[in-house]
Length: 348
Image 1 (tube, rainbow, N blue to C red):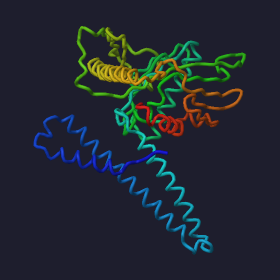
Image 2 (image 1 turned 90 degrees about the horizontal axis):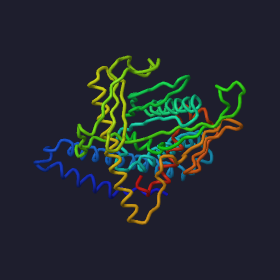
Image 3 (image 1 turned 90 degrees about the vertical axis):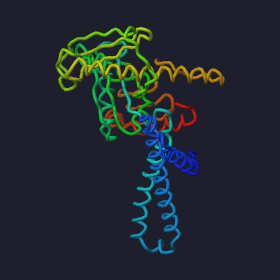
Image 4 (image 1 turned 135 degrees about the horizontal axis):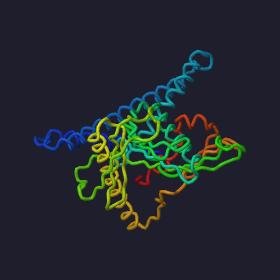
């Protein structure tokens, strides 16, 4: 059961609104905007809570009417209203779960095939497209930062920026290794293959406290490879930056100029470094609290089986769905919802 403390939300809005009345409120534009965003977010949740509560109370009052026994038209209308209210409640419940420190941020997703050559590269590309479909369904904006085509099919690596309200909050559940079992379209013997691909999910973070020194960077430029014209601009301005102290590598080739690609790379690198610092901080806190948590990148989070039966199962929540085609077309809401409910108290 998820508890929504409306009184605390209302108190928070009042406290933050009071801060806006201080004469030095606008001196720090970023801090001011963050406060305004938090006020608007809480106001929106309070409004949705009040709307859903009113609809539930109206339904309860209508259901107590003695006329229901004979008024079949009213029964039909109430059934429709009940289903709509259930959908609104489910959407509201999901939003209350998105309360992590970066949940409201945009999200950067990176895709890498596992061992297995063409099979794994094709699977990584299927995941890449699955999340593009998901973003489109949610009304999010997608920007393909980098796309390195595979030798025969699929991709060697790719990264996208998905922008929209709570984009990271929705997609943080997708971080990890994804497993596919299917009859290979690349095998003349039509044998069954198992493929793996990793998805890295990080929030886009603009943190002025993250300092990147020029001497810590190795910058390479190259021409975008392959024939992926639908994904990338055909220029000689692609940029790859390696952060020497951490070994983090970021690439971008979708912008028109080398300067723009470099700037985008640095934004992604800053987000990765800020996320790394946050993860290290949380690891220390959890160690002090005596918590043991599996944070390995190689942990398999979900299996997609196309043969000998059809099933997608999340190994963390045990939620499963047999409609694989729908899921690969971006219908991930129930998997995400199950993850958010399970991790409501975990701090993820």
